[in-house]
Structure formats: C-alpha cells, structure tokens
Image 1 (cartoon, rainbow, N blue to C red):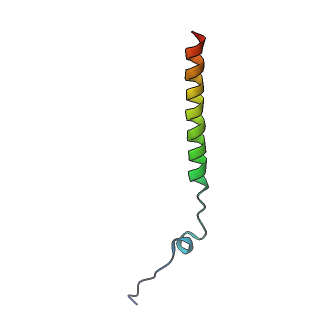
Image 2 (cartoon, helix red, strand yellow; image 1 turned 45 degrees about the vertical axis):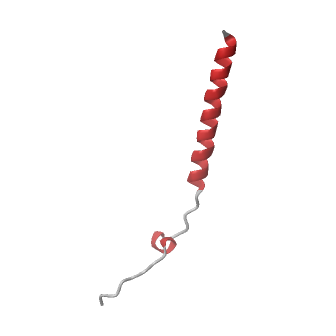
Image 3 (tube, rainbow, N blue to C red; image 1 turned 135 degrees about the vertical axis):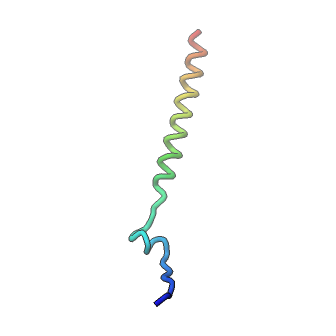
Length: 47
C-alpha cells in the first residue's frame, strides 16, 4: 500500500497548460515599452 503514484504534470492538472500567458505578457511589455519610447521622442521634438 505504500507505493508512490507518479503522474505527469498534465495528468495531475487535468489538462494541458498552453503558454499563452507568456506570449500575452511579452507582447504587452513590448507595446508598453514602444509607447514609452514614442512618447519620450514626441516630447523631445515638441520643445
């Protein structure tokens, strides 16, 4: 009765784990950085 049960991560979670969150965070970070650069450059050309 003291046997260890070995399950894969997908079996233990009851499904697969897509890495969509990683892509959403990466894209949103890049867009935020791009917006900051554009605003900085636009602000320096206005003066």
